[in-house]
Image (cartoon, rainbow, N blue to C red):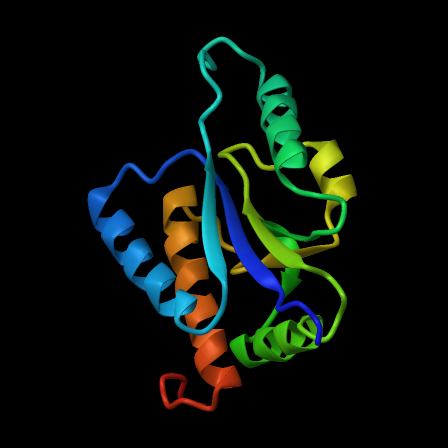
Length: 161
């Protein structure tokens, strides 16, 4: 019997807004009832005030690359990525469960986006919207969508269509 795939959300920097954090934790616990799920939080890069943006992206990128394994399916949450309707994301995710991968890692980068190295390592880029959102809000939006995806997969009434 194949090993059940795991899902991880890899994020740069902790959630500082306590209200966002409480709701993110709520959705994370809901997701964990359906599937093996973890949130991995990389610490913010220090002393960035006078650091060029490209250097910040490279440093963040190295941390991201070190955190994912070569076997992971790496999905970047990127405003220029592919847009899915929620039902399409559910279908895509179900298909991934049939592959031999052990883990899907959804990645939210820092405020300046991803380094070229991270883009090269990624398997897919998805966009939650063409609009720009604060990274902490992206975490919450993504977690809600992932929860919604699992309710669709399980045929539960949370999603109305």
